[in-house]
Amino acid sequence: MFGINGGEFLVLAVLAVLVLGPDKLPEYAQQLARLVKEVRRMATGAKEQLREEVGDEIADIDWRKLDPRQYDPRKIIKDALLDDFDDALQAAKEEPGKAVSAAHPPAPRAAEPALAPGEKAPFDSEAT
Image (cartoon, rainbow, N blue to C red):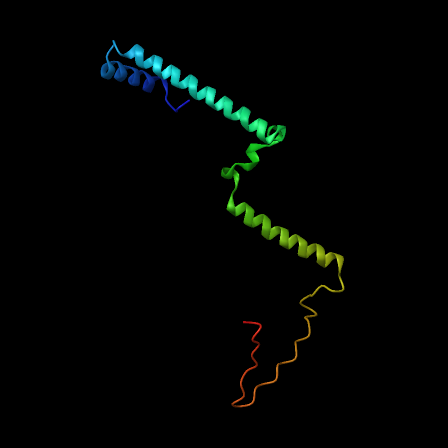
C-alpha cells in the first residue's frame, strides 16, 4: 500500500514498541485505526458528493486516457508531422494538375522595381 514490504513493516513495528513502549502502543494503535476509518469515510463522502454534483457522466470517463504520463512528446510531434505530410500527399493525389513537380517548377515572380537613389521605401502605417 505504501511501498513497504514485510521486513520493513516488522522493523517499523519493533521501533514503535521501543519508542512508544508496550503500555502506550495499544492506545496509539486505536488512534491510528480511528484515523484510517475517518479518512476512508471522508473519501467515500467526497466521491458520493462528486457523483451527485457532476452526475453519472463521470462514471463513463476513461481516466487512463487523461493520464499525462502516457503522452510522449516525440510521438505527438511525429504524428503531427506525418498528418501534415499525409494531408499534402492526399491533396496532391486529388489535384494532379495543380501539383508542383521538379520537372515543371512554378514561374518566377516579376521582380519588384528598384528604388531610385534617395527615394524612401514605402511605409504602411496600418501594418505596424
